[in-house]
Length: 266
Image (cartoon, rainbow, N blue to C red; front, side, top):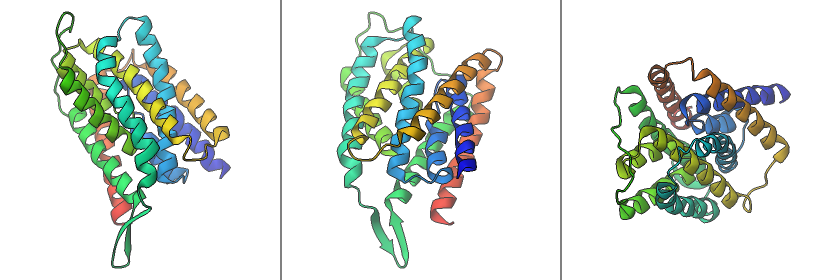
């Protein structure tokens, strides 16, 4: 058990590295590490993932606030409905999902299987844009009217999806901000990190009353992740972002395939 825990802390550093290098994507590894390596149940795993991603993202968000790379108007318009959706999903919806969804012969389709399969589908959605050589065209949103109705709707949907799988939702938030708010890419990344930080921690706050938190494990794991973020930010100066994203995108597809095989076949 102690050896497994040490490996888990090693993965915590890797999770932070990914976030520091790419500005997000940590939850892609966090949930599988908690479920398959450390043996936590699916609800606890997604809750712990939200806390780790939330705290680690706060480091990046704080730096972007100081550099004035956060558009607070867009963050509020998009983030507020997302915050409400993720809190209610974690606080009220997840506890009501039964542990056994249905049975097919002798096979039981469980809540864990449902959540992990849904997580794998979101991994595929996240991976494809990373692999494709495609650039998001963006403009600065100054003096332009924000499409509040669209932002409210998309923010709510992303908050709901992020709450289901224990992710910050950055891979969905970033393109939505660029397309709806017409932010420059630098501001879109900073604003996304800001929303992820609040999204994740607000979602986690909805779990606190439903599950028992092992703080003696979670706090050191989070600390190692923050250390990884610092290392990732440093190494990002020497590594080409586009190439790294394509390699990581392929890794994400492999991870999604592993989860599908694990849940449906093994």
